[in-house]
Length: 424
Image 1 (cartoon, one colour):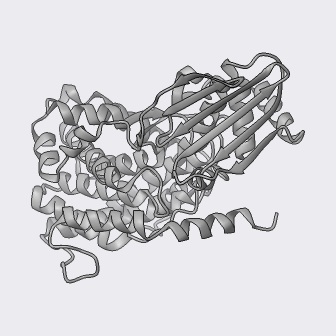
Image 2 (image 1 turned 60 degrees about the vertical axis):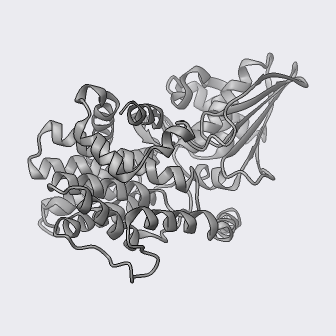
């Protein structure tokens, strides 16, 4: 029981802004602590996955994008003690100062020569010396701080792709997750409760304001016009996509991230919230269903990894489908069927970086999550004779993760090449 609680406490983290650019800001803010004098140059070396996800996404509290800009902003005004809320205290003058550094060519970005999928190195130089900060494997895992040739901090966790321990994650099984969700005292689910409040509020913000592509807002408007039905799918798509709209456009509202991703946190939470609202579920049922969604997402991500050429929202959507199935009265068999249905449907959706278009992927996976849950609740599941689907959900998850880990490295390189070589 305690293991599952520990995993939730480690993998559900409040985050302000998309986690890849925020992690770059964190490294820059950490470096600035050790450097006196005026900043003369900021150099960022990042892995392909980091560059892909940080290149075009909105920076929280600003109307700007860019790795060079967020590194400068982190160095100027970031608070490293706040971790993934490092940019919570920025002011208008900080944004202007950061943009000035960028325009003067004092903040630059390079692709790091590293096999790691999550690697950030920030070298901050001033007229008094330099500091180099390295983050690897997860977004707050600072493994090295070098100041003027001396290592002043070292540590972090080797291969810390997730913040929970491997021993804890090895105890995760689908049966164990369902047993935990059915029996845990609700007082132990305070972070889950907070995720419901934060992520729902982000969704409502996206529904009421013009953020990004306005995917969620457009769905809601078309429901009001009678073009779309006011049903569970439309409501879930609108609330989930709107949260992503706001987040990808640089909303300053914090969300609860799952396994290092705010979009995954939203996609694992908001569809279940929307389903509970449509079904008239109790607060207890909602809490247990969202806990199930989060844990299934963490379970799959523990095998899938932090970053991949495949879209992580497919994983969170699978968790959400399990949560919706739970609300529909499904037990272990139906929940496993929902996983089979989801992975047999959305596997192959590529990740081409964090940006406004992510909200459309959130909407797509949310629609699939509801459909998969409805089929699973009837006992309908994709057969093991279909493609890579196995005769049980755990084996299907293993196959899905193999595709994400073993078969997509060339896709990742190709997508990054296309992103970096576009006509300006």
